[in-house]
Amino acid sequence: MLKVKQLAYVLPLVAIVIIAIPVMRGQSQEAASDYVAPSQAGPNGKAPRMQVQLLNPGEQTREYAVIFYQGDEAFSGLQEFAEKYHVTSAHFTAIGALNEATLAWFDPQRKMYKKIPIHGQHEVIGMSGDIALYQGKPVVHSHMVLGSPDGTTRGGHVLAAYVSPTLEVMVTVDPITMQKRFDPATDLTLIDPAAK
Image (cartoon, rainbow, N blue to C red; front, side, top):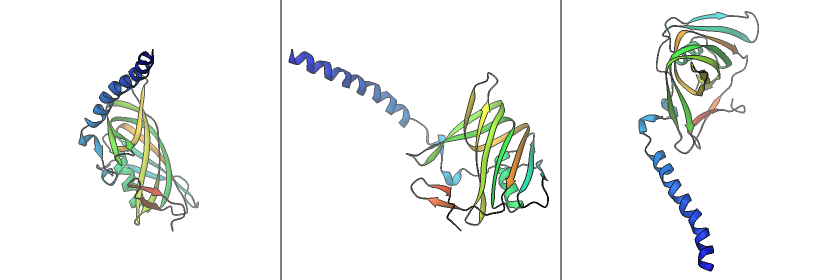
């Protein structure tokens, strides 16, 4: 009777080990090219057709409509906008459509972003983000949710977003400066309200 009880306890443990081994193998088989370091997750394109309009001249808080068109890469365009207009603190939202994107998921164990490639026409259900200074230069941080033709969605941190036919970004620039600091625990630059 004792052997039967011991066997009843051992069998579930064996099943857990057998199930866990393939799961662990699947994680280790991910290619290094599926990941990108946070320091290399910056802009990688141009937005030559981008147009900008100040929406509330004379106010302390400035509001801009930053409009991208067919073929523009929006993430690098937002970075270009932030540099050209000397943005030190802002937040934004956007809607529109893309025909290609690279989103990402931050893996805290690897301290890297796992790339999520998106191909084909998708609706931008929502895009939001902020701009703050790191080492004296503006840095854009953005996330987005994309809708597929069948209504399913995919989302993540934005690495690249190729517009088709347009992306309408509404940017609110604040009258204060927000600073980022490097966080060695994650290898990310994080907003630090206490930083001056």
